[in-house]
Image (cartoon, helix red, strand yellow):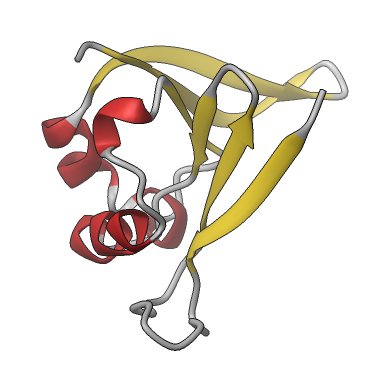
Length: 107
């Protein structure tokens, strides 16, 4: 299975992309696109996705690694554009360490 990772949001951006505090990565597989984290500003995220030629409706799932503002702050704008939300919990070593949001596309 081929997979491409594209940094969609970071505090250092390539020319032509916007930067902001936080992180987001687009994971492109042959049959699915996944958004991993959203950075803190959803408008910056959406702008950078547009530069990659990716429409929000193409994202079928999004995963938020943890609930810090710089990884999940862009979530409200992302939700507004594309997703319905399902709540899950993240476990490591058998212990609950924090929340994990799994988002499924509705569009």
